[in-house]
Structure formats: C-alpha cells, structure tokens
Image (cartoon, rainbow, N blue to C red):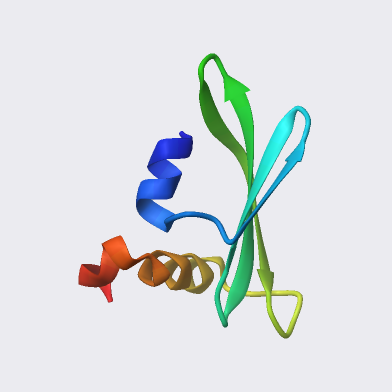
Length: 79
C-alpha cells in the first residue's frame, strides 16, 4: 500500500496524477523507479513498477531497488 511504500522507499521525488493512477517516482544516481498506484478501497495499491537506468535503458532491478531503499534516511541501517 502507499504507506508501506513510503515507509520502505521514503517520499517520492516526483508525484503525478494520471487518473485513475497516481505515479510516484524515485530517483538515484543508478536509476529511476516509477511506481503506479491505484485506489483499492480507501488505500492505494501498487499495480506496476518500472525500473529505468540513468545512462542506459536496462538496469538490474535488484541493484536499482536497493539504491532506492538505501537512499531513504529511515533505512540507513541497511547501507
């Protein structure tokens, strides 16, 4: 859900509303991650996640995801 995503990844660098979706974007030196969320009752649920490299189209999803998690100050214990 949206709260769980924020707890793990932090606040998005960019948010965009494209009804019925909300798109939250996270950026690091390694990659850009776009999380597509949709209303599920009173909560937001992630339906799709797009990983893109900064300097190339393909990026290792795991490396990218870890770079986002480590960037969140609440997760400094994982770095």
